[in-house]
Amino acid sequence: MPFGYSKKIFKYPPVQYIPLDQYHKITGETPNPHSRTKLYVFNQFEKKDLERKIAYLRLEKNYTVKEGQLVVLIINGKADLLQYRGHEISIVGQRATGHYQLFTITTQYFYKDRLIFIFYDGEDSEKIDWFNYNRL
Image 1 (tube, rainbow, N blue to C red):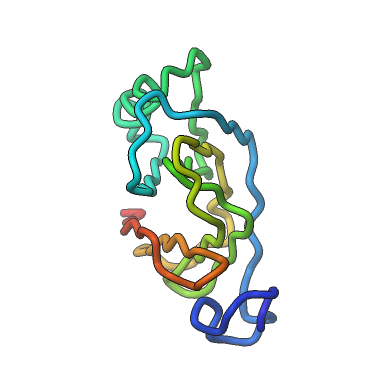
Image 2 (image 1 turned 120 degrees about the horizontal axis):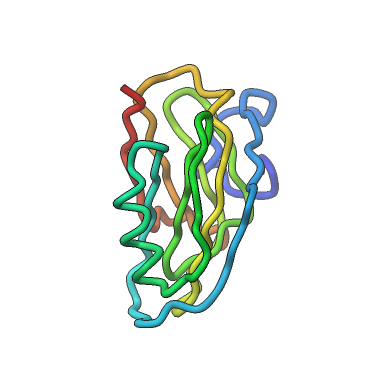
């Protein structure tokens, strides 16, 4: 069980993954809770889209994205672990209806232009949501 999770999530030996830290993390309650868990990823050029999502969450804070960073937003979920390998960023956590998590990650380790972010439930290894990201 790599990292304490199922091989359905981490198919390769742990040494092949690059751990990703969460920076500038904000958590809170969503104003309009619903049951679907959603994952979003924003880069520095998608400021308007990020601002719309932040307005939806009724955050007063101006959350900015710098070059070399991506913003990850999980609505109705919480991330505990992020690991990168090849084209895939595996995010392991759990559903959390009525809550959100917003944080940045560094892009310095990404060596592929097309990435897929996959949010897994750490308990049953189910894919909860995913987001395709293209750096070009």
